[in-house]
Image (cartoon, rainbow, N blue to C red):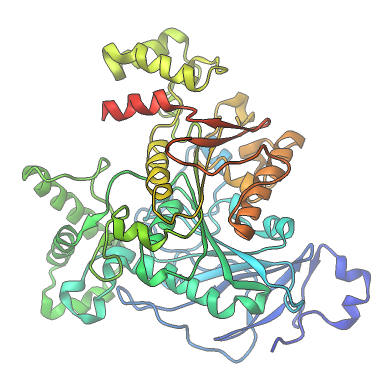
Length: 534
């Protein structure tokens, strides 16, 4: 039973509608571990940094230590330590992204909740956000676009976001060294499952419906969504899934590789199977450095043997361990686990823009033609024609090179595979093509650009979006589509054209822009070009 979360005199006064309501008896909710106190911001009950689990280094997570006094939960919890702490940033790009790095601590299993009400008898859809940053960096507070207040208010939904273990802390495979490390190869993913179990067991106390949970994430967060979809023990903990710019065509590591990496780390640290538990006390910086050397060493050995490695080299991430993750992501057994889970999937048009990475933001047509010749040789003209067929209205020289083909092919592959399953739930595909006006339009539909629109945070993120009525109008439509999908498994809204489910045959794709429209196989020629060039 809930404690009093708003004094009666406040409910009867204008203070109930104040911008911010705080107090020792305000926004108090129960959890299995003990009561928590948040605050009310413009009518949205907000909780930050609630412990959902605890874990010793490299061990499986377990329930947090219970508490009896009301726990203040009004500020962000600790974030997972980074392999390389941020000590410098590129000024202009940092202006656009506007990061909040947080404070690191290995005890980082925390979550945040935004909800319109506690004890009003409603069961609201739960939108469970998983941050990006690959599998090595990031946090639930890293970008201002992740803030859940506006989305909770707009959709009458409960928004949850999490921190979890990352990099070597979440993925060092010590399973060969004893039962206590059995899940260590994928502890980062186990953390996410345990957070979903927390939602199942506690979210009704926050006005949410544990039987209507949508997992959604972008970039590395989208890849984590895919990983949860392939995780047998996560089945039933979520009911819809959204993958934003996080589908990849490459597979995850096998146990033979992850155990070889772990063996190299253990040897580098001067440990043995008999002294393995000492690894739990090694300073993080020392551990991270040993991990970097081990990854490089194992990758060098694999290349010498002609064994395949990932395009970007070995890195920390999920693996087939025969325990937490028994299958590759797109194995038939993995796809079957989430066959009946509706999927919303898509990418941003420009993602990791070559014009920025190559210093070509203001390049002339001649400079772009030279770039394309260097990239594609005699196939450069075929590439140009494919891009122009996909985006006939583009007219800037850099538009020819900034069309994303990193995430888009993987999204199409995943949509094709899932929509072809015998009892497949609907798949909905989008392409976010809106172009940001910030800095003379330099950043276009950059990686992460759609997130402020999904969360209805374009004003909070105006350094990325520019803000203003046009951006807000699109945010209204995009956030409504995501909310409707979370509520029903269907993103259709009266403010968008009819959004048909995707199939490999129809290629139905919603082009999200100031004027959105549905296209069929909008970039088929370009995808065929890229696939032929692999």
